[in-house]
Length: 494
Image (cartoon, rainbow, N blue to C red; front, side, top):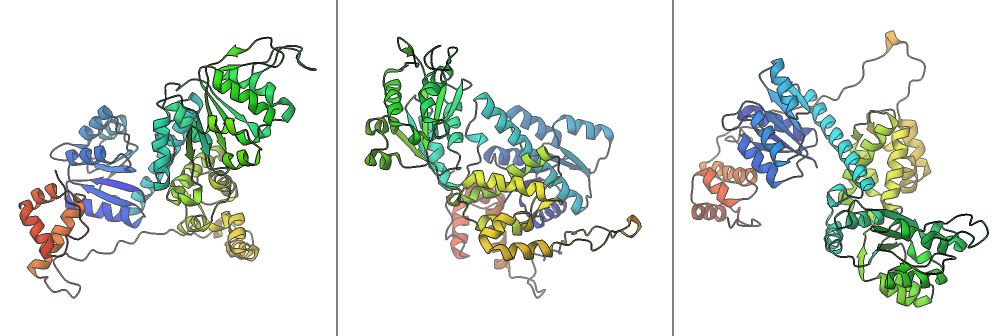
């Protein structure tokens, strides 16, 4: 769930704005001043967007944005203020605000602003990621990998990037093994240098040696000029051998020599040539099993398998599904020139319930096809007919398509009905000092709720909670045990 930081010194406006964001599917985090907002942004770089009041007593909105620029904090900012002057709008936009509205703002206007801002941020992130991939500076920050199953992968990538050790990436097809290789290159000393990819399974057996090591003019029929091989192209950089298990056995012998001696011998050459290449290989089959059956040289396996990294399939990192879907929606919607803002919860539940045998590549293609199919602002279940068919059968697809509302006959412009709008309903909040029956709560119940609210507001930091409540930490811990709030809390040593 995307977190939204709401900053306002007016407690009523703060609560209303946070409630609108909450009912729109976001997770609001609140701050009552600019300094507190900056502290939260420094602690958590994954906050999706900030709704910022311009006029505050300690540090105003302009000061917050100036500090963000100085510290490199890139969280998108939406400005809200009671001042509607043109100079204020221009100043806020120059400081980097992506949107601006005047209090009081309609809930639907705020929700649209949040969604548009997050969509823009997702598209910019996709562009930055693609630029980093092309320039050879791809890092962990450019890859969507927040799932717990990816923590070890990222840790191993960081360690592998510090040395030229041979790396073998194993994983199912479509999991993103090449991106892992690019992270190792982009965070190591060979960043921004050549990154050459070779799909060993797509090269005809009689051309593998020539493709990898090159050839000299006249080496064989059709060799009308000298040709550099992939090793020579990657000189000074990284060579990524994808599906290395598909190499013929005779080519494996030459590859072993190239790895051991750091030199290659082009086809038809009279002497070997030195190359400085960092080799990263990948496979969707266990090389150890291939070595046991004799399909892969055992000595080459041990040479490649010095630093193995296992890339988990998508079904084991479903926490990244929503972020991946939004990433693909932003990218493909921009390519197709369509205004697709996101995906509906039922459609996302459909994707989450599928096991994705083709992994991230299959998900990417499914979203691309859905973008082409849809005519709405959000992807729906019927935009994924192949997933529905594989998950629930062909009959369910037909029912979903038939259930989609379509006009029975042409509708004249004068008779066109208004578009149905889903208005966010904000129910009045119950007064925290009254029970559900309208009676005044006991003092102990009010104090318990105040302590629980303070713990949530300060993220469980007991030092801050005690200071905010104006009591000592020993008193705070005594009351936690007294009210049954101590269980499951981790004390803050600060």
